[in-house]
Image 1 (cartoon, rainbow, N blue to C red):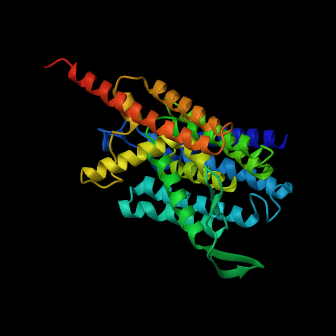
Image 2: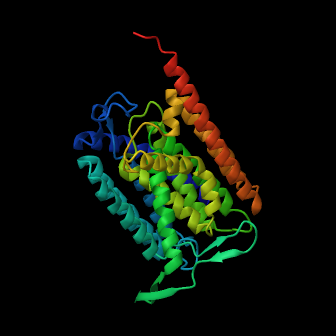
Image 3: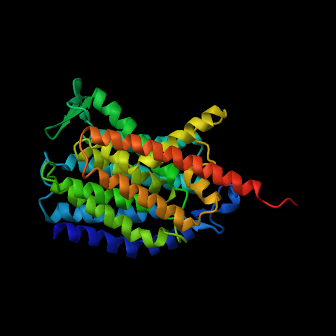
Length: 368
């Protein structure tokens, strides 16, 4: 029952708060205007941004409610200690403020890294990190050999765990920028976030994991996303905005860490977008451009340009995410590595087919 309350409470909050955020974004002039970059924009009219704030509100309201009126988050040794919660909360605040400024003033490229980096450090200071990585072929890779105590506050030590913190930093930055770059079609990031939350929820209930705190947190996050989803699915009435698209990756990356370093699980949930982003960065570097410059050559753009309807492309991504995400509930060890290899081949095949159909469409256009 506690999971049902958390999920539906966040869902209802998302449904109620999102229309208010739409009005607020319009009032503040926080709009994505397609005329600014018509070559890569899909929408035809100005769209309100700041959607991520509705998700954040629903997520943190329900989480704090459970913290104040229950004991599921009260332990310091559970998946979500008070210290860890404040790390997540301050991280989200950095993303909210930085995303707002970026949406409003279109910050220069170097400033777009400041608030994601601040969010990542906030989480690390909160004591959340990947202390080990499970070797799919047996054993673990320990990342906590070097610990340095920086200071103590109320008897709680704040330590630098060198290798673990470096890996955590890279993992969270990768998760955030994956969902940021993926946010190019209505409902795509939101829907994949819901699927990811459900997978981690089910994973946390398995006997060998047994993390009720993590299950509740995942249920709340999934509900908050689903409450926003009707306003964001095609045709969208509001976009996530910079802070919102980063926040989805931030929480998914955090949940995978809290689940005991289930990095392979998160890789399969976000596998297709991660591979697409990796290819986009390589492609831009080879062309002598900034790896973070925007274009219209992501896989979802190519599928759209090949002639597939908008909803079909988004639902196709949902289907692949469901397939590979839920596979983590049934495969173990080396089988996860095998599924990751299959995912790489699927990505390569999709990219090849999308490029081929797109070229065929261009070649068959009537000459004027």
